[in-house]
Image (cartoon, rainbow, N blue to C red):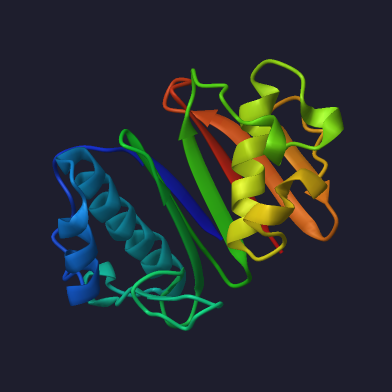
Length: 188
């Protein structure tokens, strides 16, 4: 398993992005969103390359939506490994593993996670709301739940950073970049 995060910079690895990736990148209205998108797509190639023993520049990243079959969006795919990625305007995260893996990263300082996605026991104030949110997003990415089912995922036992279990999933949540972002990982 290889999990990485990075602050978004103006420099992105000069990988050969697919036409679909370039179209999507160009569709972003703001340069910061485009930079973060490309940085996450470069970082996930680095993670996959580390596991596959391959040159990241030759790996192709595609997408497949499990609901509609569209290849312009959906779960990211690199042949031979499970991958996941996440980006905000300031941070990116990526992961690769030999089993299902999901990753989410969010900027700290925002505790605006809506009650509607939290189980009743999770609705307290403070940083635990964001801890639970990044883990729930990671669980969505592995298919363990859906956006509509988030309130049914009770992670009220997650009140610190560290490693946890939820059903058959290993979860890990931590602060990164000197506390500027929170990283959540779910793996089978």
